[in-house]
Structures are given as C-alpha cells and as structure tokens.
Length: 379
Image (tube, rainbow, N blue to C red; front, side, top):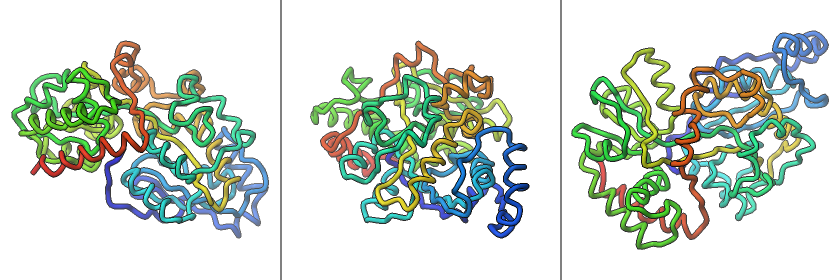
C-alpha cells in the first residue's frame, strides 16, 4: 500500500470516531488491582496479561479504521496500562516518520511491500517469540513469507485483496472483469497503489505482475493511461467514501473498505468483485521499530492481538481476512464473512491472485511509472 492520507492523531486510549475511551486512572488501578484487573479478566474471558506491566505505556502507529472498537480498551484493562494510538494514511507516511529517526512508537503495521525497506534500512527489531506464544495460532500458509523469511521481524495482522467495489444498482449488472471497469461509461476511481494497478495491467498484457523488465512496466503504464478516460480520481484510500457519496460508481479499493460500506448501508446497492483476471493479495504486519521505548510490552501486545478472540474481533469489525487459524477453527469468525470468497477467497480465486514482491530496484521502476500515470490521469 503506497497511498497517503492526512494523518489523524488519536487521543490516548482511543481509536478516533469509532472507539470509545474506557479510562481507568492509574490511581484507581493501584488501589483496586486485585478487584478491577481480575474482574476485567473474568468478564472478558480470554487472554491473560503477563505480570509486571502495570502502569506502563505503549505507543501504536497503525492504519486508519483498522482495529475493533474494544481492542485497545481491553488491552489496557487486562494489563493495567495506557495505550497511545495514532494513525497514518499509508506506508509512505509511516516510513518517512521512521527514516527521520523518530523513536516514539513501539508498534507499526507495515504492508508486505514495505517490510523489505524497513529491514534493509535497519528500522525494525527482531522479535523474541518466547514472548509471543500465540504465534502458533497463525495460519501455516502465512508464516515464513518471502518478505520476511522465518518471521524474524514481523507477524501477520490482516490480509486481503484489492478489487472493484461498485454500486450494483447504478451499474445495473455484476462486475466480473477489469475490462468492465476500464470500459464503464460512468465515473470510476483508481486506488493510489502502484503495484496493484500496474500489476493488473501487466496481467492483462500477459506479463509477470512482479517483472523487473522496465520496458514491460512502461507498457503497462501506457495501457493504464490509454484506458483512463472514465477516471475521476486516483484515490488516496478514500475510494469507498467517493462510492458512498455517489461521486463514482466504481472504485478500485481494499476489500474490507468496501465491505464496511456495505455493512453500514444495510442495503443491496453495493458489491465487491475480485476480477477473473486476477488481483493483488496483500498482507499487513505487526512489527517493532528500532529504538522502540517499550519492546517488552510491544511483544505482549502482539501476543494479545494473536489471541483467537482478539484476532476474530478485529477481523469481524474490519471485514478483512484473519491470519489467525485458531480464530477460524474455533468458529469465532463471522460465518457470513468466512463463507464469502471476496473476503476469504476460495481455491479457485486464490489461483488468480498475485502478491507483490518488492525491493529497491522494483520500487524505483514501478514508483517512477506510477508518478507519470498520476500526472496524466483523473480530474
């Protein structure tokens, strides 16, 4: 993910407009440690925090609208800590912040195509999995990824696809192909994501979506520009908002963003499609930056996120796919989501998905061509 959005600063122990602040002062926790914390654990009925972290603070830097309503407040109550939760609109914003030498955050959530740069530039710390026993809950096919062999620096947080969200009522039919998007007579939005969009064009041209052939990537750029007459905007991860507002009828977007629109609407107007030619499969990850002030508590937080109930709560709220096999096997995932191949792709759909492999060479090639596209496309 390379799109950017204005950064929203979230007050401590909140997640903006969608998370209620449940604050217990450290004084009360100190006086009622045996009653309040024990009661919280009993009431919540799942993950237990290791001892010794009461009164500490954790700083998390994550994407917007990307956590369940009670994830933060539950962690605070279970561990007797406070959590400062800030958000960013894209990997570039987070990467720029860390490259500047800032060391405020204990947790960041990079996408798979950005992990390579964080590792290469020594911006992440290796994880101590003795402190993360719930790593065993991660699905086997999401362990040991190409971008982080042996999960030295990262664990998966959420995963999903980049496809087409659309207003079925206005479009008047189901969308099954990228050609449906490129030839549509109304307004559409593309996602500001070089690898997703150029990868699709490369697929349609019969090329590898991870090619390092600069000529082929240039050809993909030419294809996109030639098929951009209906593009109203190259959206910085707000295509779903434009779809909801009716300024576009179709938007290339992350599947969870579209499913959140569908859920909020409680109507049959909106739909999401993974086009038959293929689409990008992405994985976002939890990682600890170099210089994080509280690595020990950060690893406790990662273990908490990988708890089956916590993981299910997040995925059921965001409508993204969970990497937590224990959540799935325990029946904690919303059955409607689990049975929806647009969220949890079936074997046939998985065959047509591609993951973006990245390195400095590829980032330069694709990033350069994408900048040319953005200067030529949209209103």
